[in-house]
Length: 125
Image (cartoon, rainbow, N blue to C red):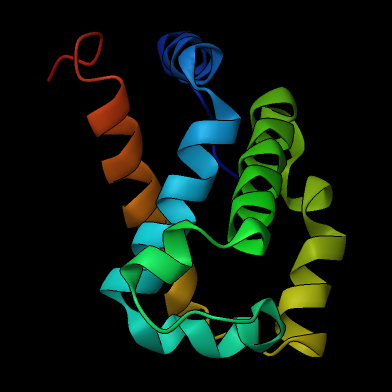
């Protein structure tokens, strides 16, 4: 289990308070699907994902990207028990959807890049 310092908790909460989920979520998922096209195989029911314009304009990508960010918000609100918070989603993605765990790293990178681009003025190394 991760032990968060007070500074880390405050920083995470501060960053997430500035995120527009309806903007960052879809942009991050679209980035992942465009940059890592093999991740598209899990979204066969999303329709046209043939090129970047189709992906960024796809309403199902937009909806699911927003859902992902709201899901991460659940972790921010439950930092002391993230494992239990995501137990059901873990079973869904691993046992039912058979998502390769490496794809979550790719999505996390896409989310990080998107957040950094959107909040450039407030993020400071």
